[in-house]
Structures are given as C-alpha cells and as structure tokens.
Length: 449
Ligand code: AMP
Ligand code: MG
Image 1 (spheres, helix red, strand yellow):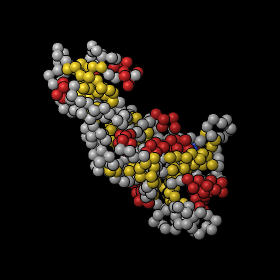
Image 2 (cartoon, helix red, strand yellow; image 1 turned 120 degrees about the vertical axis):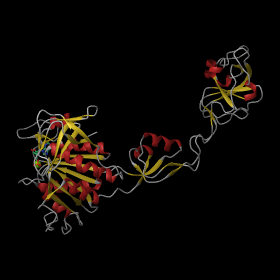
Image 3 (cartoon, helix red, strand yellow; image 1 turned 90 degrees about the vertical axis):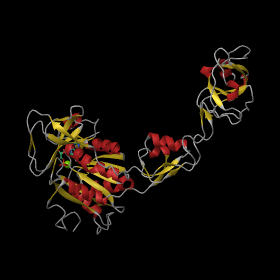
Image 4 (tube, protein in one colour; image 1 turned 90 degrees about the horizontal axis):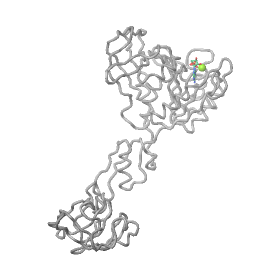
C-alpha cells in the first residue's frame, strides 16, 4: 500500500488535525539547509554560521576626519583671527596615498578626509579654521590645488589652536584585530554586510536561501496574458505563492499550471526535484474526481516503486480543523526526501495555507529561529458579529489599524475572494471554540507585513 493511504490509522486521512498539530508535524520534520560559502551580497538575509573575527584593525591607520591641514600642536598654540599661525604648506595628502611628506616645525600638509596622518603631524585643523591656503604669499588656493594636486605649496594661515589628535580617527578606534565582528547566528542585513566588507571579507559561510518550486494544478488554468476560453480561469496561485515564497526569503521558481493528469504531474514534479529544497503545489487535494496530486505523489514517494524516485517518505493527506485550508498534504518525496506541501486550490485557501504553514518552513530551512508572522491583539470593528464554524480555526482577511488598535474584516469568508485578499494586510484569527465574535471584542491578528 502506498504511503499516505492510512497505513497508520492514528495518522492519515481519518481524523481531523488541528492547525497546531499539522504545523508541529511539519516543523519537527524540516531541518535547516547545510551551510554554504556565498559571496557577500548573495548572503543578504541569510543566517551566519561562523563567528567572524576581525583580521585587521579598523581604521587600519590614523587618518583625518576632515578636509584641512595636518599640523604640529605647538605650531598652532595660541593662534587666533588676529594672530594666525602662518605655516609653510609642504604638500598634499590624499586618501589612498601610500607615501606622505613629514611635517616639520612650522610646516603643514594639506590633508583630505580619510587620508593617513603624515609623520610629524599631531592634529588636523579643518579647512574652515584656516584661510584655505589663500593667504598672502600663497602660491595657489584650495580650488587651484584640487586641479593641480602636486602644486600644493606656499602658506596657510590657521586661526585656531588644535589639541593633539584633534580630527584624527585613531587606528583601531572602530574595531581591533582579533575582536569578534559578528557571532554565528546573526542575520546578515545591510549593516552587517557593511562590517564584513569593511574588514575585508569577500565571502561568508551561511545557510542558503531555500529553493522553492511552486507548481499549480488544474486543467482549467491558463497563464495570465493569454486569451480566456470558456471554462478557463487564470492561474493566480502560482504567482501569489512564488511572490510569497520570495517574500519569505526563498529563491522561488514558478513552474506554472500543470494539467490534471497523474503522469504529467508526476513527471513534472520529478523533473523539478533537482532544483528544489521545498516543493509547493496547489489544487487537486480535496476529494474529487480530478484530485490527481495525491495519486501523482503517492507514486513518487513510494519506496517500493521501482520506477519512482522515492526511497521512503511519501506525502500524507489530511483534513485540518481550519477554514479556509481544510485539505492539506505534507511529506517528503524523491531520493533526497525533499519536503512537499500540497495546498488546496482555492486562491485564498492556498495563500492562507502558505502564510500559516509554508512561510515557517522556508524560514526554518534558512536556519532562522523566528519563524512566524507577528501576531497582535486588536479590537474588531464591524457592523455585525463575525460568525465562524464550530471546531475550526478561521482565518478571515482584515485591515489592521495600528494607531487605533483595530482590525476590520474585508470581504467575506469565501475562499475564492481574491479581490478582498488584495485589500487585506492581516488575518483575523477566530479560535476553534468561538462561533461568534461581537464588534468591539479583542481578536488575534496575524500581520501580513
Ligand atoms: P481544487 O483544489 O483543484 O479543486 O481547486 C479549488 C478551486 O480553486 C477551483 O475553483 C479551482 O478552479 C480554483 N483554483 C485552483 N487552482 C487555482 C489557481 N492556480 N489559480 C486560481 N484558481 C485556482
Ligand atoms: Mg483543481
């Protein structure tokens, strides 16, 4: 008997599973992906799996925090507007310049932000505290210098004294060689990537983004952009879920609609396994004549099937105490035991199922520990009470108002209502035991981000 067909009566198709039971079952099965070494920008959003040690101190050398003049403190002591210190400009120090002139007594070097403090100099006076080298007897001004850098010569008048190390960024004042820059477990956002680049790391070891293959089923489905024939509808699920998978952090591949044919579906899924860390299908999981997903997956996952790719695993189909999203399939298929979630076909059902079950899987595969959407409590604003079936956890679409602390239902409970879904930014959660919610009551709200 193929797996998924109730060979264990306590599991499988017989009983009703709660949302939490199904989710727990999925999450205890899913392991984080093996770490790989990625180029820095490819690792954005990924979880670091190594501690990163600083190889060289930042800054690597004392450097100027201002455009100005590198001077000796004694030469500018007591300088004022009335009695400026007049120094001989011995040259320019630009950022990136390897060799610097030595600043002696009575001398100054024109210096740019980020340029190394030249030997002999003890402080930088900003250009604003000087005449900019335009004073009497000066060969050329600041502007002229910048077009002819080697022409820096003549004199500069300094109008204020400077303390030792003024406007100097000390070597190692940011991080020191040997310090821990980032700890394993850190999620690499732009600031962390900035630090890694600053300390010279070109690659990092992280858990990769999972590759999620999204595939919808249904002979009635055609690709958006094409002409609708009678009886056809556009395939929205594969677009919605590919976008949702990307949003969750995955690298998503949209396969698009597959016709309701067991052999075609089976071979399509098998072909996709090579690039999948997770497979998500929609449609064909309820009890109907054309429910081909079960049949197709049974053959892939069957360890006794010589023709199939399967070795162990198999996908189990369940009924959940949930609305929308009652029929769900979950299991592992193929030689690598690739996890697969088979979601119901109604657009709202498949999207809600993705949010509740697939998104946490994507995040678990990435090695993230914060798997779920933010949940808040909010006051229900509605003209009439919400009604909800007994024994089912209901997820209604809503609009959340953070300032008012309220949530308002949009559209009804119908799982075909895509237009209302597009207005929603939250899911209103009505617990299993609750059959009616009065306006003004506090409800649980999943924020869709
Ligand atoms: P199923 O679960 O395959 O029986 O589909 C349930 C309902 O959802 C049917 O009305 C289908 O036409 C619709 N449906 C299934 N897949 C899609 C899809 N990819 N895009 C839009 N509607 C779909
Ligand atoms: Mg279908």
